[in-house]
Length: 395
Image (tube, rainbow, N blue to C red; front, side):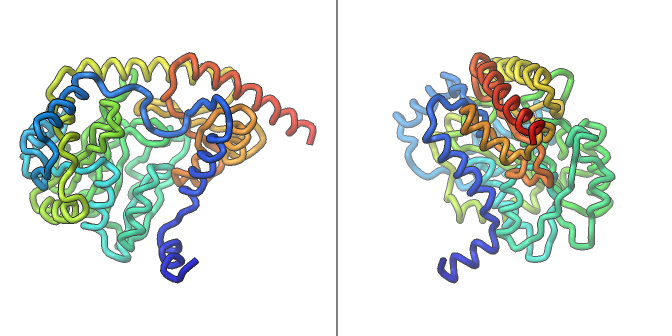
């Protein structure tokens, strides 16, 4: 390893990426693997969105766009945010990005200085940790558990605040746990943020995918929160557009210029064809979102029933398309469990440690396979679990 690569490796933790890569490599060498790992919908982008992209290409959408994003798209994003209970943004306060993950790094590099602290739910989406490291900031993990269904509470946030605290990240619904922070609790968290002068990144990319009576409270719409909140979202999940790489962030006027400048330096502008497709997604028929949500909901019920039959507890999945299950009662840790399940049962899922979990007890299962494949995955998982339990009893 060169000196430069050694410095990079010490600054950015790579073990999580290595684990994902190793699991993927194992899967590539096995037949008929049922993939419940990545957060990539198996459902196709709706036809009217694809058509809009094709027509845009045919009409010459192959050049740079406005640095902030196509004006019509930013207006549609503003209207969409407001339509679902969010704050009312002007188009000039919205920046279109090549995916939500890109936006995380832009925000971190713009707002965090070396020594600043960013508070992130644990477990939570791991690129937030990487973005903080790139900015030279410190990640403070707010540990959650089954006790609150892996939801952050206002008191948890308060307990982790120090004089160096600058940003609080709320991922709602949460990835990897699939849980939704109750609206009343979000309001209490907002009060803590105001009390301690925190900037809040409200990651609402899964907000259209909730189940039962669960709803997401947009943070920026709460009293006194517009000026201190950056709303982050995109089209990847609700419209099955992961490969289009199209996301956005919206924020107060005093923060957007600096954020927009960094985004411009990184990307110049977001891909033209993807912006035209995103415009069709937001302004076209929305029944496709409900159709996909209903499909995920059916899969959620089937997967949860299978876990219950196996005696494996899990957090109540209230949103997104994940189930977070505790496999520790099988007698082995989650990391080893995932590797054995892959090698012996040809089912791919990821251990919670990839998402910053401080235990090695939980696995994240994605609802990104048809019901028949999920049932088959549960059958395979049952055989592997029974083998592991038998070994544990014999030991």
